[in-house]
Image (tube, rainbow, N blue to C red; front, top):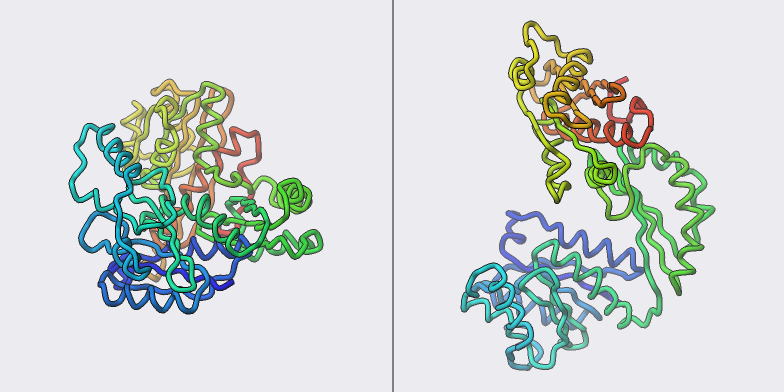
Amino acid sequence: MKIEILCTGDEILTGKTINTNHSFMAQRLTEAGLQVYRGTIVGDDRASLSQAFQLASERADAVIVNGGLGPTVDDLSQELAAAAAGVSLELHEPWLEKLKSFYTSRGRVMPENNIKQAMLPAGCEFIDNPIGTACGFALNIGKARFYFTPGVPREMRRMVTEQVIPRILKQSGLEVVTRLKRFHSFGIGESRADELLAGIEDLLPETVKLGFQSHYPQLETKLAAIGKSDSELDATLQPAVNMIRERFANFILCEDDETLEGTIIRHLQTHNQTVATMETASAGNICNRLVTADSHGDVVLSGVVSCNLSQLAAAVNMTAQDLPVDSDTASALAEHLRQHTKTDYAVVSLIDQKPLNDDSRAETKIFIAIASNRNMVTRQARLSGGTHWVTLGSTEMALDAFRRTLQGLPVDEKTDFEQQ
């Protein structure tokens, strides 16, 4: 079965927007055992889009069209799809009512141009969008089945995963179930991960594929499996899952759709605990990630950010004269912060940076301290790289040290990213 992905939009074509949607769709299709035959990018003009639909209809069995379902004049997917299929556009009343309710619930009146999003090709198959205003649809054009999805990434991802791929699997005749098991780790590079998992191929049948995706500072290790039933997948995957958990051990931050910061916040909520943060090295990113995960706003009580040690000390009523950037200072700040904010934990991350010969790089010492009413945990490391690289690395290191502290794990295991 030949599958083509057709992404639309001038911003994609000109490079103003990075086309992460294609990457996501291609990966998910491949993981489901489906073959992506071709990828195409087309701008927002009628002639190019019409030609792209025509060509795809002749060479592919299934085509996923991404984008062009919005309310503006340059969103042309519904209109040109109808023309290519030789049908008219019809108002889909249930979707129009949902759009009106969407705006009413937010105290707004729906703009007239949003009616356009409820105009669908006659006879098409409706595909629901549970989190947005652009519904999808499917219809036949030529010999191919076309599946239309919105360009907003989070909407597209959910629709492709939950609705489009199952339809394509049914179209292909493959009576299978699929599963993607993911492990998120920090401190292990791809080469080391591959070494740690030596022999795992002996546990994996041809229906299970092992893959790695590095997005510094994390590494995602994936098991993509295909089977006849969920029970079959359980039995097939479990030996490999056990091996990964055993060999990656403490470096696993979380699994599947979980996040590092989400894991931390859930632990604190479960134990009715709170935290405050203070940081220079990570430029406020530690607090930002924790606050984002703290949906109820009752866990993260304070966040202090400054590149000036005197200002950090003053914020917690601590004497600031001649403070060195080291573990002792980080520890003192953490304890003062915990007492000042009356939180259960205080996380402090400091930076001591010395430029190297290349102005864009520097050798950076990171000092992390985590204070609680039981003990003081410290972690220090040396990172080398540009400012952005160090910010990402130091943020992840501090959050990982906090996770380890909460879970009773050692915080001083060396990572592949720090200088020894």
